[in-house]
Amino acid sequence: MSNFETFLWVAYPWLCIAAYIIGISWRWRADQFGWTTHSSQIYESKLLRIASPLFHWGMVFVVIGHLMGLAIPKSWTQAVGVSDTAYHLIATIPGTIAGIAAVLGLIGLIVRRVINKTVFLSTSRSDKVMYVLLAAAILSGFIATVSTQVFGGAHGYDYRETISPWLRQLLIFNAQPELMADVPWEFKVHIVAGFTLIAVWPFTRLVHAFSAPVGYVTRPYVVYRTRDTTSEPARQNVAWEPVRSVKNQLDNDSKWHGA
Picture 1 (tube, rainbow, N blue to C red):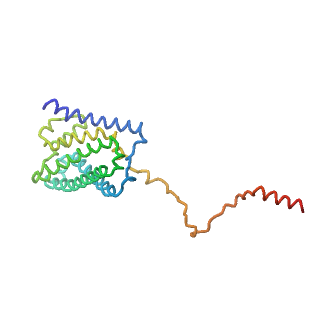
Picture 2 (picture 1 turned 30 degrees about the vertical axis):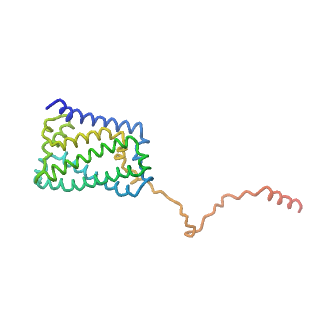
Picture 3 (picture 1 turned 180 degrees about the vertical axis):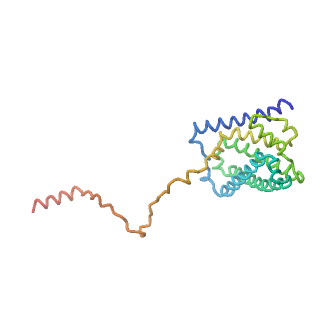
C-alpha cells in the first residue's frame, strides 16, 4: 500500500474528525448567534414544503442504515440467525428508498436556490460549498449502493468484511488501511466525500442538525388574550379615576364659590 493510500485511509479521516470536533466546540463558544439554519422559507415556501421533508426524512433513514451497517459486526447478525441474503435485502431495499428520497429532496432544494432569485441572493459562499460537498457525498453513496448492492448480485458487495471493520478500528486508533485495498472505487469516493463533508460541517449551516427543539417539550404554555369581546364581559379597571381637565376644574370651583 502506497503512502498516499495510507494517508487517505488513516491520516485524512483522523484530520477530518479532529476538524469536526474542534470546529463544533469553537462554533458553540464563539458563534452561537450564527448557530441556525438561516431559513429562507420567507422567500419561497411551495417547493420548500415538498423538498425539505423529503430530503430530511430520507437522510434520517440513510444515517440509521449507515449506523446499523457500520457499527454492528457481521458476526452479531449471524449469531442471531440473520443470513447474508436476508441482511442484504433488509439493508438494500429500505436504503435504496431512503436514498432516492434524499436525492430527490436535495435536487429540489438546489433547484429552488437556483431558479428563485431571492433565495439565490440569500445563499452565502459557505452555503454553496456545503451544497457541493453534500451533493458529492449523497450522490456518490447512492451510486455506490445502486451499482454494488442493487445490481451487484444476490449478495452485493459485503462491506461488513472491509469497510465496517476498517472504520471501527480507525475510531479506536487501531488503523488497518489494508482493509480498504480491494474496496470498490464507488465506496472509496463516497468515504472521501463523506469525511470531507464532516470536516466542513461545523463551519456551515449543517450545525443546525444538533439543535433539536428539545426545550419545547417542557416549556410553559404561551397564553394569548382573546379578542372575542362577546365571549365574556370586558373587565374595567376601577383602581384609578380619569384626570379632569383644567377647564372643568375651574368651572366647578367657580360654581362652588358662587354658591
